[in-house]
Image (tube, rainbow, N blue to C red; front, side, top):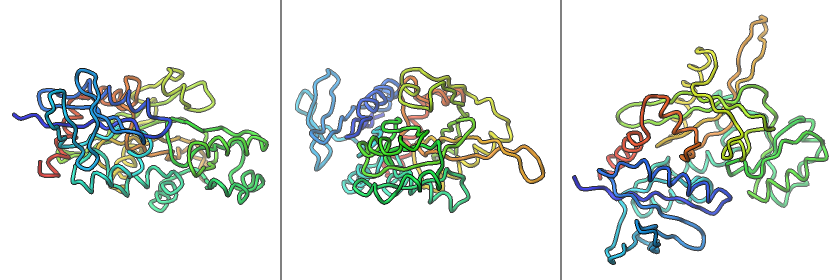
Amino acid sequence: MEKKIIAIVAGGDSSEHDVSLRSAQGILGEMDLERFEPYIIELSAQAWTAILPDGTKSPVNRQHFTFTDASGKEIKPEMAYIIIHGTPGEDGTLQGYFDLIGMPYSTGPLLTEALTFNKFALNNFLKTFGVNTAENMLVRRGHEQLVTDDEVVNHIGLPCFIKPNAGGSSFGVTKVKTRDQIRPALEKALNESDEAIIESLLQGTEITCGCFKTERGDTVLPITEVVTQNEFFDYNAKYNGQVSEITPARIDEEVAERVRLITSAIYDILNCRGIIRVDYILSPYTDENGEQKTRINMLEVNTTPGMTPTSFIPQQIRAAGLTVKDVLTEIIEDQLARAGR
């Protein structure tokens, strides 16, 4: 069987560049080398380069997305596995490029990626389908004065979160407890993104749930419970071990089933492809009859979730009795088949 050449596209132009490269190495280490011939392609605003097996780099022709190996042979990937966390791989930009040159890729299409990357737009879109989200406000760089501190306190309340409207890995996120922290938090968030989102604090248990769907069927992965002593699930919690990640989550099975159903529905509503991960807060409340209930609040939809050794998705795949290698193979072959390759 002739091996399919797969480009593992990583890097990008955000603060998550290095995290993305670690995810790319994680995918490379799990790739089925009997079926595929993978190359990591590192993207930045300055250069697009293919990392060859001997560690040398070869420039990528952006018109055709090709490069040459050490012998001078032209290499043309047949699919892009996008693992860029942030722009341009998670906001639709790269998907539009690949659409133009006719190359299949591992994520949802341009509109899906653009929508999920914009937290404010995503929250308000999913609300129309009955998904619970935090109360939120949008602030654009250069127009900070249009949102007053009083509006934040009265509409959103304190404590609240102020974060970049586009981005991930908790860069630029602040848990705001007092009025005098609002402006510095906005400045911090707007250093990461042209827009900031102000969200109400949701109290409860943080969980996350992965999902992927192919022609073989739908797979909703075991739920992970996120426990950290930090103020929130920040960068140190995510990547420096300052967190306990419990899979499967210690939650009631009825609630877990609802989370799985919501995750699967969100996947379909957004027209996702490949692996996604949806983060939630489970908030207890008492209904009008005095019964204890659990509200499932969606926090974020991540369409290029991390694949480092400490990332959630590899943990959930193993907890499901699957292997990362087999899941990657299923997703890649599904996308190649969709493209007729």
